[in-house]
Length: 295
Image 1 (cartoon, rainbow, N blue to C red):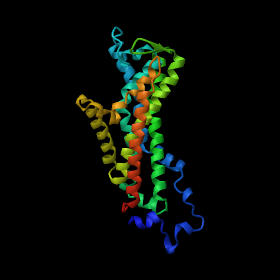
Image 2 (tube, rainbow, N blue to C red; image 1 turned 135 degrees about the vertical axis):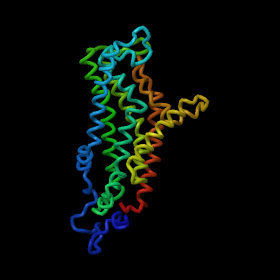
Image 3 (spheres, rainbow, N blue to C red; image 1 turned 90 degrees about the horizontal axis):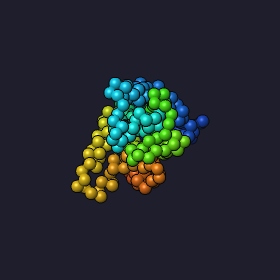
Image 4 (cartoon, rainbow, N blue to C red; image 1 turned 120 degrees about the vertical axis):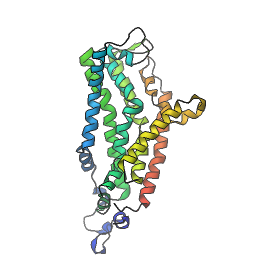
């Protein structure tokens, strides 16, 4: 079945769906229906379980290995056992760069491509669901689940760390500290930045998802691109060119956890991520609008 009938919404009897009794494009594929479908998928439960379990695994590692060396407090990991907020910051530090890239790439890359691999995409288009609406719904739900994934890791870390090490000030690698009341909104800013900086990965995975029928290819392509940009950012010989790489700004959230909050790096990182995302989404919508869907 080609996409010509599905995309235009051709119906039996030669009646255009735009004029079919009761048809409203705005009522097709309700957002809640797509949310429930994705929530019930096994990969959603697995990713949620893994992210929720990571703070417990890290806590167990600290219990076995002992308290990190407090004589040389230079990273969040060395301060992880200082308080609940410190443990949450440590989980965010560990998740940035790779651990949180995977669920974002999965939730946004395993969307359109999975429907194609199940041979259900053409039936969605024949319902008929307008193509632009289909992509908008899929990407919105992918972003929603990605946001929950990014939030889940430090949130569970905060609960686990507070239970294990108590509620207290957020001690900083530089030697200063933030009160618990100050730390929570700063941590919230950091989490929001991490999510927004991952939007470029979400958009890349989504674009690849519209271009292939293999979900693993879309997800793997986005993760691989993230790894490559991280490697390139480590090459100091590239100089100022590294500032154009999303990976260059991925740890800028640490500027939110300073005695004096610094916005510069976070603003540049978010601007770069969203700019790339807009281009990638435009490519996704443009390419899918012309694609002959046969699966």
